[in-house]
Image (tube, rainbow over all chains, first blue to last red; front, side, top):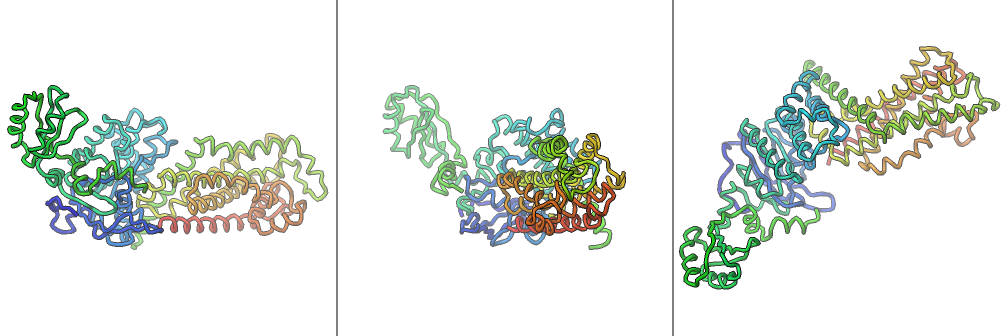
Length: 333
Length: 266
């Protein structure tokens, strides 16, 4: 594993950790090793982003941590309880929103929230009150008495989140919560998740979206083929890629080939869909002056120069040797 | 576990079972796919029987029940409750395939409560079916000499029949997790019905069916209903009906809980 340096914040011992996973394995009948020796620790109050392509082992890990699947090796505890030996206590402590918001289309939002309350032991009156609070919180009061089959994807996701919060869990598991959502709904859900985290809820979030992990997570674990291949804060992981590159936009794109030829003396040059060039020199912003000088001497006019901070996609590429999207396409699991 | 903790746990599980039963009932009544086979199909069959096959009661060996509709309504209730049990299984398979089942499993509820909630919901549907079918039968000419007590006992037997059918449906759904398989089980409901004296007395079944009917617990339940409705031990035994009904509920619910444990022990 490539370590992004930091240990999880606030953890002094297991009792301070919301989630502790040691050597976790899950081998399916037939031999598919979906989770292959995962170690991780998530501090109380942290947002942990679990990033990887489809089939990397994210959802299997979440299913184990939420007691829906037994591990075939290793151990894991959530909120201080072992996921196998103390599954019932784990379930009392966690809120879960799994992929694709599995909600009954023939129930209303309010009915589903009240049912969830009953499942968590709330009395009928308590359940009604809590449902009302949560409907307000996720802005679904006007739609609360409509059947779910009339809800949009974003509304269903918000309801799913509200259901996960009915019993005020200390740890929240969200499995790809924004997959398939439009940008507005995604941003709205992010705001809600930040707000929950501010109130002290630990959030374990799986995602395929690099941007989502960067936006939300205090720390990120990158999983590929069942193993954690890198872990750290988004900034720490960014540093694994090295110094930021420079993006150079030319006034006359016809001079692009000539510019590329000249700039190779400074470092690796690649094209970009927007039409400019990206140069990785290893010097970061310090390379701006020599690059501009080189182009100026060749009478190639520069429109703009920007420092390109490495993204988690770059990290994924650096530690796995392939892009996240490529892995998702290659892996049938 | 202390007595207090045990009482609290039982109260909690009671609330869970009630909430899941409410949901089962609500969804069943909202989904035409479930409502039609459970309520409309048996009623249609009852109407056909009432209009066209009443001559059956002229057959030698056919017991005297005033009208053929009065005799056959027990079979209609049995048909309805079996179909309600099957649709309960279909709904559960839908929950498994659609992911709602995972939501139930990730909550701190006993696995048995998930099964019992579904069974209780179906029992309530069985009661609604019995009330409806008996009312229709009375409207179109049936006269039940067993009176209110007989009708009440029949409704209870209907609830047991629906519960047992739901337990069986849940068992198959939990073992297979397949919605399409569950949807293809409708013909088996009719196999169960025709191997019990649902529409004809046992004496008029052919020898093979009559032999099978001896080991089919539905035979005793449907005959128990008739005995209660007409207050006539010659038509069957109410006690045997309750024994067969309760035994079937216990057996199928145990099978469903066992299937549930096998499914979640993965």
